[in-house]
Amino acid sequence: MDKLIISGGRALNGSVTVSGAKNSAVALIPAALLADGPVVIENLPRIQDVQIYFDLLREMGADVLFEDDWMEIDGRPLKPMYLPNGRVKKLRASYYLWGAMLGKFGEAHVGLPGGCDLGPRPIDLHIKGFEALGATVENQNGVLTIKAKQLKGARIYLDLVSVGATINIMLAAAKAEGVTVIENAAREPEIVDVATLLNNMGANIKGAGTDKIRIEGVKRLSGCRHTIIPDRIEAGTYMIAAAATRGTVTLENVIPKHLESVTAKLREIGVNVEVDGDSITVCGQEKYRAIDVKTNPYPGFPTDLQQPITALLTQAKGISIVTDNIYGARFRHVDELRRMGASIKVEGRSALIEGGKQLMGAKVIASDLRAGAALVISGLATNGITEVDGLEHIDRGYENLVEKLQKLGASIIRRKSPESARER
Ligand SMILES: CC(=O)N[C@H]1[C@@H](OP(=O)(O)OP(=O)(O)OC[C@H]2O[C@@H](n3ccc(=O)[nH]c3=O)[C@H](O)[C@@H]2O)O[C@H](CO)[C@@H](O)[C@@H]1O
Ligand SMILES: C=C(OP(=O)(O)O)C(=O)O
Image (cartoon, rainbow, N blue to C red; front, side, top):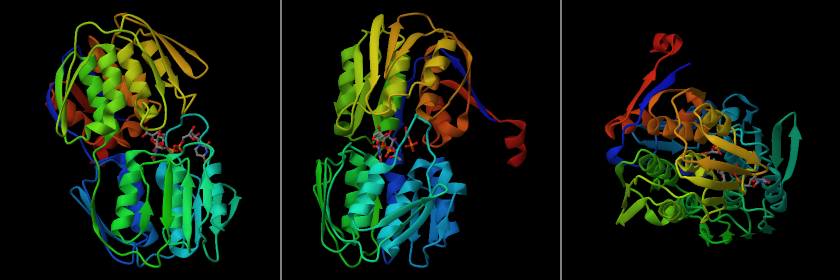
């Protein structure tokens, strides 16, 4: 397997352009299948999750072209085929094929998804949503068969705020008969992005970005062009990396509003953050304060930056408490940070970090995407050599990570395994 080799202790300096959002991309691609015509999606990140989706669409028989940062998708040749596992297990967002196929054909046969192992990731709310729209849902050996003669709009209250369930219901309801109202909907920017695409395709969706979304079903959706929003999680990762290495980094192509919770928490730690139009400059400082961080649905602090900010807080003198209210077991990075000398205790859904100790380079393994980001940040900020294994997780969500960090002055290389060197 490939590894990252980081020679840490150098400040990151310069500017970095943020890519299109992973969690939008992987929802917009299946959404495009609902159109009776070609949809062009621009600003797509070149990441593994997008590549897997591209391969999946080809496997399903869609006409699809993927060049540079855009993809043209024509779902007209598609048939409601059986997708039990294989690629659908390689990413979380294959769950959107349930909503997209159900909305398009009135039936879907798609296996349970994969994605980051963050502890239990139930799908009961997705099922509840499809059933409320009049579908039957059967789980046969890990494959969901979802069917409806005619999807009918309904009022659906989500017991928990769920990004995936909110988007899946929007996909299924866009062409349903009548009006669907999602209450306690997720408000993440990626939901607004998906609603924007669907509306450009001819859907009638109001309220995306609030906790009440109203979808009036339409008969037909057509092709259009859409540009993906910037990835707030990628941006947040570089903001935290700049702070951890005491560098000065400007992030270009961001929507600062999407990063307000991150900006607020970095300022509380003592990092200087300046916002200017669609760029943010982060200026690291010598000394940091220990703080508490609680993850919550948007606009709260994102769980996807919980692991990276934990890495930064190992440098803040005192005790910080990081609580993950979304994924209470998302702490597999902690053992690896301990290997680097961090003093962190996990109690329930919180990590207690005794910061201010000098970390050291070590051989560590990324157990999931953002654990990988946390380990890279620690490696960059720590004197000595850090080797990060488990790159298949990092590749799922960060476009050109090594190149972007090298441009900021980091000493980081990807060492190819003999197998992957042979493949090239
Ligand atoms: C592809 C994608 O967009 N992934 C994101 C999405 O994941 P994902 O869509 O899987 O996460 P959800 O927003 O659905 O999960 C939020 C919470 O609801 C719970 N839940 C969810 C669905 C369900 O049917 N039942 C249930 O109990 C989950 O266990 C979790 O505690 O949102 C997460 C929370 O912001 C992010 O970490 C992921 O990066
Ligand atoms: C958890 C994440 O992704 P996924 O839901 O795709 O596994 C993530 O992006 O941090």
